[in-house]
Structure formats: structure tokens, C-alpha cells
Amino acid sequence: MANPGGGAVLNGTVHSNKKQSNNSQSKNYVKNGILKEAQQNGKPHFDYKPDVRSYDEAPRHVLFLTYMGYGIGTLFGYLRDFMRKWGIEKCNAAVEREEQKDFVPLYQDFENFFTRNLYMRIRDSWNQPICSTPGPYFDLMERVTDDYNWTFRHTGRVIKDVINMGSYNFLGLGVKYNESMKPVTEVLEKYGVGVPSSRHEMGTLDKHKELEELMAKFLNVEAAMIFGMGFATNSTNIPALVGKGCLILSDEFNHTSIILGARLSGAVIRPFKHNNMENLEALLREAIIKGQPRTGRAWRKILILVEGIYSMEGSIVNLPKLVALKKKYKAYLYMDEAHSIGSLGPNGQGVREHFGLDPDDVDVYMGTFTKSFAACGGYIAGKKELVDYIRVHSHSAVYSASMSPPVAQQIIRSIKILMGEDGNNEGAQKIQQLAENIKYFRQKLIEMGFIIYGADNSPIIPVLLYMPAKVSAFSRHLLKKKIGVVVVGFPATPLAEGRARFCVSSSHTKEILDTVLEAVDKLGDLLNVKYLSKKSRCPICFSEKSFDDETSFEYED
Image (cartoon, rainbow, N blue to C red; front, side):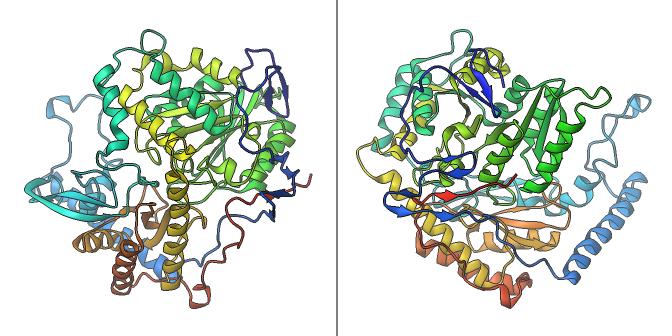
């Protein structure tokens, strides 16, 4: 990684001669993938086990019917395109103007085929307009369509008190105004809404510096830098870290912002199978042995890109093995904790704390403030030399406006709640309640017979529905019961793996979860989507140890 400070580079990590600026909250960490201390808080550690459960695959007839459904939809799509071409059916899609027929086409018919003929049939399941805070309940603006989902119009009616099972408001901090938000309103009155300048010019405020120092303290790292947009935090900073002559090893399920940043960097990109450390090691070995294509020269840098929690799968990165691999092969590790920061670990510090690893084991921490912190923007954190390098070379620092001051204050408020600096134990209670809600909701879904993906500690719980018609029906029926849930299909998921994605929050009460579970249970029977075999419908086997326990892991060479 960039080493402007002159520190030594050992095992893929920049080691500075300067003393770390803040003290770690815990002295027991996993070093080189091996736990050095056997106990924490007087409790013995437990052996690390993979965090991703193995579930049944869908019956073959379900996959057959899913592909057959797409096939029939495709055939009817071609028929309707033929009818549109000859004026038998009205075409509502974008088309080339007649006077531009000799120009290079802006719209490729085949590329828009899926949108025109398949997605448009179930488009009403997405982009629902919300008109309230994303608490355990929200208000929804009713809309109807008169042309089969090509356009929508609002009726003026508001659907009140819809149960929110689709928001990333994991810790319930996105709520209506209360007295704890008074500092946010004071900052709004003092600084205004926005900063019409970049961080390199006149856009760095004292609130930005305060937030960066607090974020570094929260993560137990030397320094941090904040950005006004989470997506841009990945897409504009990855190119600052790698370039031509570098190699990126990227998890196949990484977010689009990571993929875009990797492509913009000019580095060679090689994806590895999701959370598959054997496949990653094979790529690392090959990269070191063969070097760059054609020349055979050694790679200038090898950067591994992963996420903490994967938003479509709900799986948690196998960080202990990943750290052991990156140190063994002297690579760098970039971890996106957009969904895991605040929702994992005894103090909400993310995947690194969840596994009890040393803060120095991850080279580049990236995360967003749009989920657990109920705000917007993102951050890059790690060694001071790294952050100083990003401050100079990041495109976001030069070409984008600084974070809004009230937003920065909201993030400061959220972090102080998690750290207990607000004078009470609200943060710890929220983290504990979130863990209990996740355990309860996942266990009940499994007992009902749904195939679900992800790790047992993940607040994102995907329920596999497979068929596109059932994906849409699942969303529509639940909305009639005043339950809002996100459904996801191709191209965000593999073609035959359409799903509903439940997001659990600490603000959900047991009564709310029971209401949702009762409706989902009946709907599962109605749509016949309980595909889990009876022998697999056992309760989740959770460790009796608390989240405060550490893990041990040793990677064999």
C-alpha cells in the first residue's frame, strides 16, 4: 500500500515507527490468525467455525419450473416485440428517433429486452415511495398503474403503520426527532445544510475533524477520513490505492461500487468464489508464481477486496482465514463494512471485533454511515500513512463536496451512543437486542421450512423464493398485510435464485416479529415456497458463549 511515511512493509501491512494515537479497548487479539490469549473477561475462547450455514438446495422440479417460467416469459417477450414493431401493440419503451436511424444506436433492443418484457411485469414490487422515518413502522404512499407498470400515479392516500422489514436501520437510530438529536439541530442552525466546497479547498470543518478522530477511536485504528457518499467511497478510493501492474482479487459477490472502483483503477481483476478461501489461495499462489501476463514480472501490489456482510447473501466474510492468507502471501486486505459496522461485535465495531482480531490485521477499513448510523456518507480508516495518502490522492477529496455538517453531527451522535459516551447503556442494549432478534427470527423461519441464506449473526436474512412470479406475489401479499419487505431477483441475484430479503432491527419487538412470522408462515403455505426438507428444520445451534468471547483459528501452511 502507499507508504508515504517511510514505515516498513511487513507481511502486507505498513508498520509505522510512530506510536498509535489511541489505545485499544481490548488487549487480546488474534495474531497472524492465531489467538494469543486464551481468555477474555475470565471466559475461555471457543474454536472458530465457518459462519455460513449449509442449507438444502431447491428440489429439481422447482429449478425446472423457474427456468421454464423465464423461457415462457422470453417467448412472449419476442412475440410482443414483434407486435410492437408492426404497430399492433403500443410501445412504451425508449426507441430511436426516425431521423437518427443512421446514427450509432443509443438503445440496444436486446439489452433492454429483460426490462421491457420481464421486469416490467413485476415492477410494482420495487421503488415504493416512503413518507416517514424508517423506524419499526413506516408510512407508504399508495400508487396505482393504468398501463401495466410502465407508469404510476399516486392516489393521494397514505398507507399508515406498515411494518418495516426492509430497512438497513439495524440499530433503530433512524427515528423521529427526540431530545438526543438537539445537537444535530444546533449544528444545522450554526453551519447550515451543506458545504459548497471540497475537502481540499474550504470544505473541511471542525465537525469533520471531530468525526474522523471519533471514528478512528471507535475502530481502534490510527486515523480515518470521511466522505459524503458511501458508493463513491469505494469507487473513487480503490483507484487511488492500485493501478497498472497491480492485481485485484475480488469476491464474486462484491458490491457494484467495489466492482466499479476496481475497473476504474486499471489493475488486473480476478474474481474468486464467494467466501472460498481455497480458491483464493489458489489464485494467490498462481499470481506469485506466474507474475504479470506476458512479462512475468512480479505484481506491484496484490489487493484482496471483500465485504464484511454481503447484502444479497447475508453471509459474513471468513476473516480469520483471510487474514492468515493475506499475511502468508504478503497481500493487502481491503474490507467493506457497509453492513457489518454497528451490527456485529460486542461493541458494534464490525467483523474484526466479531472475530477478536487485531485492528492491524486489516490494511484498509471501509464502511458507510447509511445503515447502522442512520445517516449518509462513508469512511476509509487504517494506518495514519494510509489515510494521509488518501487525503492527497482521493478523487472524492478533490472533486466532491464535503459531508453536510448536520449529517456529520448525526454520525457523531450515533457513535457516542455505541461507545457509551452519551451517559447511558443504550448502545449496548441495542446491539444485544439486535442479536436476540436475529436469532429468534432466523430460527423461526427455519422451523417453518424456508430455505434461507447467510450467517447466524447476520441482520440480513434472505428467504429463497426462486420463481419470479412468486417473488412478486410474496411482496404484494405481504404489503396487503401491511408488511414491507424487499424482494430481489435477476440481475442482482443469479437467474434462478429470486428471494425476499428481511432486515432485522433492534427496534423490532417480539410482537412485531411474531406478526410478520405469522403472515409469512401462511403465505409460505399459500405460495408453496417452503422448500427446506423436514430433517433440516432443526433449531439453530448457537454457541452458549456470549459475543464477548473470542475465537481461535490457526491456518496451516
